[in-house]
Image (cartoon, rainbow, N blue to C red; front, side):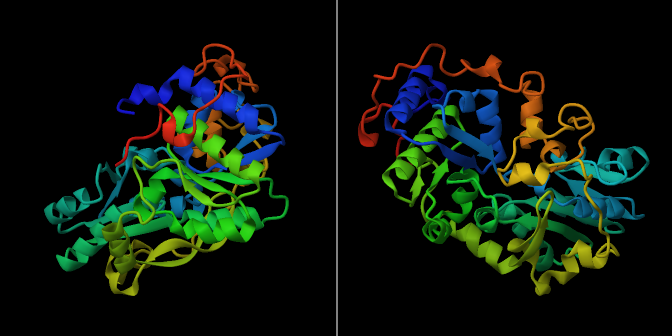
Length: 397
């Protein structure tokens, strides 16, 4: 393929769905990991195109959503501090803490700034030597290299009025926690394409082997997701459990080695709390001791801040694939993107936010999206060529 619209082609989608129907003999529950995949699924109604018995559930793949409420409150406490310029990507400014959000702090006189790259903070720090510049470093492995570069350059260039409030989480321990939990329903994963572009996907092999679960690293366009789903179903039907790469036009098995080396120099792995889920052992990055001068959590008196989620929220069960957003009694009523109660509604990438944005709170069955990608009926006798012969096979990198 050469062009984006080919990844949204209804005829190709129809062939893939027909092939799913041909090979599927049993019900299967699959989880997509990335929030971007969730939005593509709900926006295009892909979950309603699948054969009966194939269910997609939504994983903890939204970085804003899984940033714990207490970390949001720590960020707000620092942003309210005198002599602080608090920097963040824009998606964090509307995320509510226990008392307001960063926008409300800014409206009350706090110096809160949106940056488009972590390295923008170096310029701000040099231009304001009398201020403490704090960057809110959140996300999965995808954003870790740029955040690591900020800490590295701050130390190397002795920009001592710059620090990071770090809340990085890692995908493989989350998958391990989901598969090990009682009541787990997930039988296969559509793996995180963007994360694996940085980290590669060899670290998923032990998880797949230990739990005998197929993991197909998948892209974000409708055809990507349908093909990844087909590949996962084929493994399940054949009794196989391996890691496969659907997103071969972007990522390789080893990933971005220079980025991984930089991450290893700046961060070490430790326990992390996930919003809606709780603490997962060895599931996050923390700044190494040599960067303690640039660790905002140590520089500011916020380590003891702790908060609780609203009891009505079921975001933890949604993030573990046990329930869907419309199973929550608060969804679309007490909990909306304007007034979110829990993890999966606080960010535009979250599963609840996706369901709300595309009208699932009005029509839980999503029938209005049924034919958005495949405009006509899918014929069961339409076959798909072998992977290496298909018209939609991805071009090599």
